[in-house]
Image 1 (cartoon, rainbow, N blue to C red):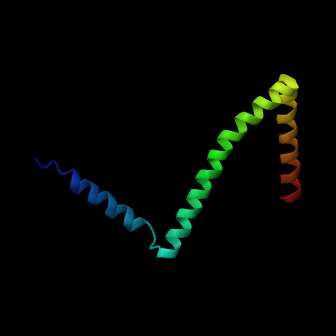
Image 2: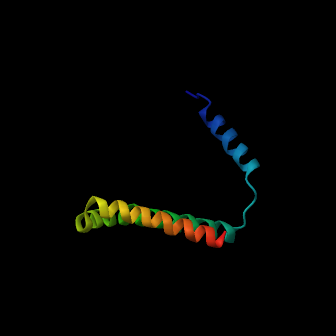
Image 3: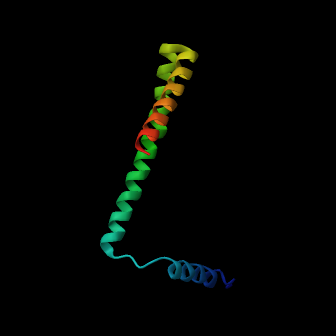
Length: 84
């Protein structure tokens, strides 16, 4: 039984290939490494942030955690204003 899904997949792939620019082999390698770097950075962020929050909450309490978040927001705002 042939349901035509192979043809639909081919049409989808051909459509994507028409929209994407041609990449050389070295560019594909760099892009793959950048994707890997981004993945690892996000994984580290997803592990470290909850641990940091728990440690702050344990040491300084809820008020200390809120103050640290507000401090981080203020410092970020100052840095952005100074460099922007």
